Amino acid sequence: MHGDGKQSRDFTYVENVCAAIYDAVDRKVHSQDPVNLAFGSNTSLMDLIRLMEVVLGVELKVDHQAARSGDVRASQSDGLRMKELFPEIEPMTLRTGLDRTIEWFRAEAGVS
Image (cartoon, rainbow, N blue to C red):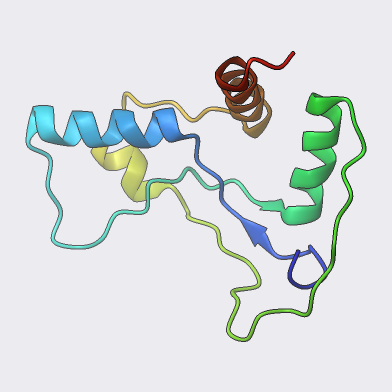
């Protein structure tokens, strides 16, 4: 991990991103401005690692590296444009998205 792990992001589950793209194509939704496909959550990388440890049931070894020059400390959408353009798409909790992601990787790798 680059830096102290306190940098935070607004994680969005890939299924939500795909649903927004599909909906945009299907309903011909467009925007002159970029649209952040996020819902306004905020999770530090260390919190993400702790959650991954819970879901995986193992302690993860974190190798801390020097912070990267220009790395954004905190990134969070207000979610307003996402909700305006795609009102039917409900955000998935980080825990649920992580559970599904790990389940998928385990199925693909044949590991339990």
